[in-house]
Amino acid sequence: MQLNTDWSKTVVIYTPDLPWQGSPAEGVQRRLLERDGEEAARATSVVRYVPGAHFPEHQHPLGEEIFVLTGTFSDETGSYGPGTYLRNPPGSAHAPYSDEGCILFVKLRHFNPRDLQPVRVNMAQARWSSGLVDGLTVLPLADFEGEHTALVRWQPETYFQAHRHYGGEEILVLEGTFADEHGEYPAGTWMRSPHWSAHQPFSKEGCLILVKTGHLPLSADGS
Image (cartoon, rainbow, N blue to C red; front, side, top):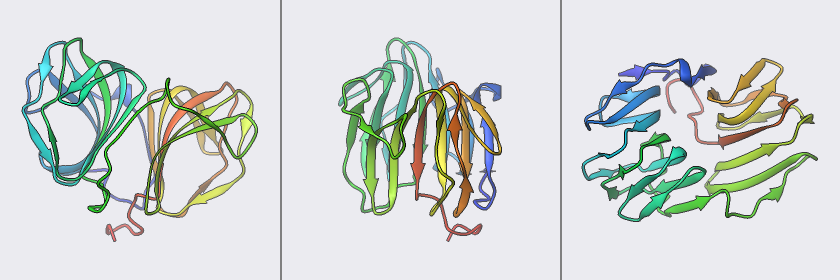
């Protein structure tokens, strides 16, 4: 399957508009955002576990990244509630499940093979830092050889300077409304902007976003 794999194009998707699709595990469904491959694919999805659902043990040859949106997600390493960021490195394996049900944001097979550090961060318990402009606070989640992942909270009426993103930018709006000169993006919006894309973001009502930069191919052919 090839879905949103032209890295030269900006993609904006309001995820609640997408249908839920089945997975190999009963009770686990997905909203597909981008996908390059069949079941073993470089992919970005919103994933839903119904209460009691479980997924068979499996490996992640090129890593897995998870942000828990609602409910409680569990595996052999523990149970993780809303606002938890998980990073399972290349070669890791687990058998995930959810007793109460959960909804996750999941990215598969996009890690640098040298990025081997597992990460577990609960945003409610971590220490946030001041951002580059007044009204921003930032919680760094992962940083490896130019790839950066963070949570960024915008207070109402916060404005950022115009800038470009080497290696692209990807955003999931978790709360409120994020905006730039191209449009407004309410909670549930996922967007991906290509290498050297530029914008001048702001938030009039305030928002919380999950941001990844520096991880996208530098050309449309994936190089």
